[in-house]
Amino acid sequence: MKPVMEYNSYRLYVRDYYAERKDRSGFTWRDFAKAAGYSSPVFLKLVCDGKSNLSDVGVERVASAMGLVGVDLQYFRLLVAFDQEKESEAKKKVYAEMRKLARENSVALVGEDQYDYYDNWINPVLREVAPMLPGATPAKIADKILFDVDTSRVKKSLGILQKTELLQKNAEGNYVQGNKAISTGCLETASLAIRDMHRQMGELAVQSLDEVPVNLRDISGMTIGISEEAFQKISKEIADFRRRVSAIVMEDSSENRVYRLNVQLFPLTKELAKEGGNA
Image (cartoon, rainbow, N blue to C red; front, side, top):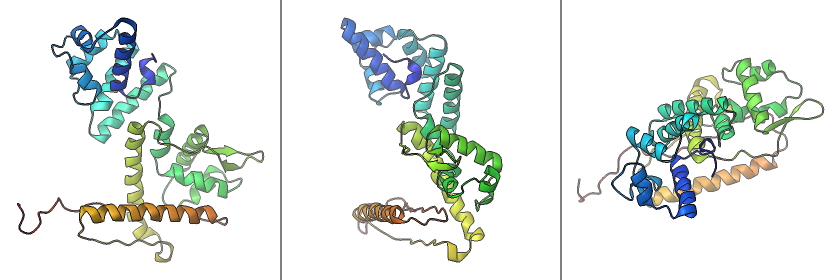
């Protein structure tokens, strides 16, 4: 089976370990649980199914049962912490430790490119801007961004975009968009960064109320009372709208500015009891 550092889910790693041992020697969940010091014969299966978690002591027991030592054991501990952590900032800190350990051992983690791309709002902006400014230096590119961004941040972003092949340099030394599309990759790591991306773009939208002239922005909103059925219908309308916008963008061959379109639909209250129902 693959080394533990090639996994982004400890549950999948434990399941693969079990499957390999079972194929070789008739290994059972009972055998696995006993080796890890658990009385319940199905506990580790429940862990792999996402129905139970490992305690700090359990992490050490299971790792010992699988023969993990050294950096593999260190990474497994971090992998468990990353999976079981619920708070996003703490989760990001654990992921940073995972990346550091992997780099020190010359391993590229699954989903790193996607994480780096979605981690900062400037990356998708520069993917669009750089090809529009042939020959521009990072300083000149930074000067074209409406919101504050320094040259060093632009340089770092351009490096990420080239590393992920989302930007390439042509024979003339100008940036062009690569054919490669950015995928979600590892959903767990990508979603962590995407949440930050949405937060950052939302903050820029608020800034634009004061910093962008009215004739260059279109910001509006509605506060509405709706049912679950209406919510589903509106969500579908939003998805259809995004597709229509994408079609307009694809047909546009004279772009001269980069915009961000935020579409937001979220609850402002808890579910309210209907009149005559239980409170």
